[in-house]
Length: 146
Image (cartoon, rainbow, N blue to C red; front, side, top):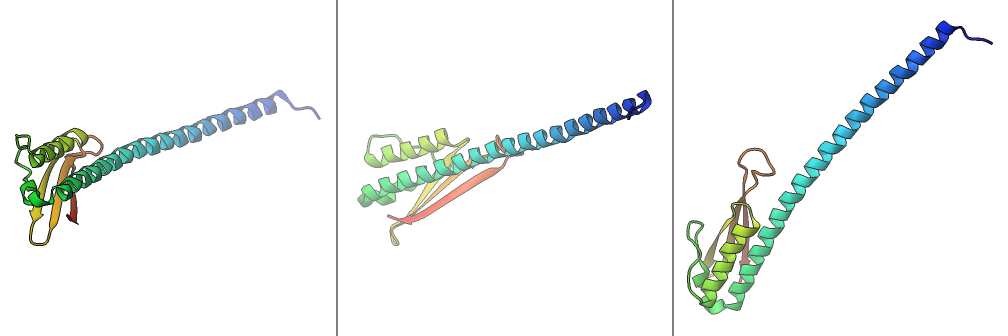
């Protein structure tokens, strides 16, 4: 059975349309995969910030536990800068404030110590504006006995 030239052209045209439709579907799929990858990277960075906040809080809490006799001296506000001096408490607070500033974007921290209940509350704040739209500020609060 022989095909006429006209039928052959129509058949080739359908193949071209099929290829173009396949390319469009593939392009949409690849764009979706790229968007998924970008979201994954953003969320991984947010997770890294929270992990850093946890490590900073646990580190200063360990320092408070090691210097339990001077635990009340670890109280510091967000607005306060790291104390100067070479005492153990001053050095620990310098490390706390420096770690918050270095490991968290626009990071800062405060510590509230309750001697009556032997609890310490460590608050850390940072900005996630680099990974989320706007000026999304995050706060992490860690409360534990010392």
